[in-house]
Image 1 (cartoon, rainbow over the protein chains, first blue to last red):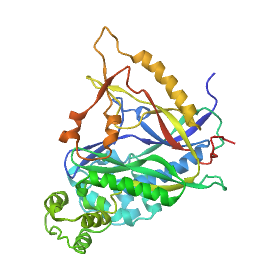
Image 2 (cartoon, one colour):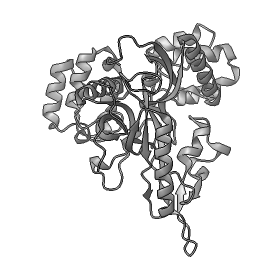
Image 3 (spheres, rainbow over the protein chains, first blue to last red):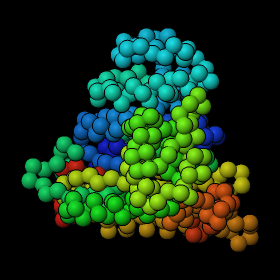
Image 4 (cartoon, rainbow over the protein chains, first blue to last red):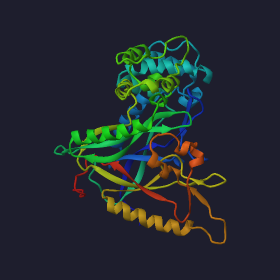
Length: 157
Length: 256
């Protein structure tokens, strides 16, 4: 008989970090060859008995991550950052935070302007604004919730 | 953590932030690794400061941390230059060259910089911090037994840079260790080297590098791949234990 007790584990997605030049670190999740999301490697952070509590903690951790991670720092082309078409992404980003770099957001060679723009402006955004921006960058996630067996029925909430 | 019991006492966890060594420098990624906890903030902060000083001594050039100035300091570059001048360090000239080559400048300048001035430089690089102290409810931790996800790269097995697959969560370390040992023994039986075949190699640099964490110069001056360490299937770790937060759990190992 299987274990009847499960917890919701907030886990950080393991990332590979490469650095091909002084100015251009490359990042990607530590997936195996299959690259399927369920095949990623994880670093567990916290466990909860209730999924909603895990989601709250995950949002806190994602926001912490967004505070230190510049999404324009060589992750790759726009499609790596967001499921939105580039035009929609830029329009909605502009609505949230005001003027964007004048350089088009369409090629990695121009991402430097966007990287500098993020470095300059993101620290001035409120948590709410940053969280809203990160919602647009929906292809970049550092944490996930996993259902994992537990050896007892925890009273954790 | 918002779900702590209302009557919980606090303890102070020291956490190592997720700086990662790369071929060209050191970058700050999201995440942390816990190092246990101490009962008072003062003790924890002293432990943090000691660890921080050890790492700084190992990283002889603070400007290899982070891909650009903004990743290293909240001070804009002109203000940071004034910060340096405050203690008699003449910084590099701000000009048309972008981005400024601070790490190259440091290599030139460091011979004339005193220990006190070095400490001042680190103070100005306020985004380069390797450890932090966080308050948490006493004893609200548990342990996850993790499967190491070995992957064959056509030459040997690699465990990945970090992480694995969580198998089971425990309140008590002893229970987690018993689970880890049981799984480990079963897996070793399966993966032990065949005496009639070439033994498969398992790269263990991820663990052996820990002694050099984080980020000091390459061991013996060699690039990382030349310092890779290996073992065979009979000795490779297939499971490990990771400390995790259990918000709301009670201290003392019990659960009620």
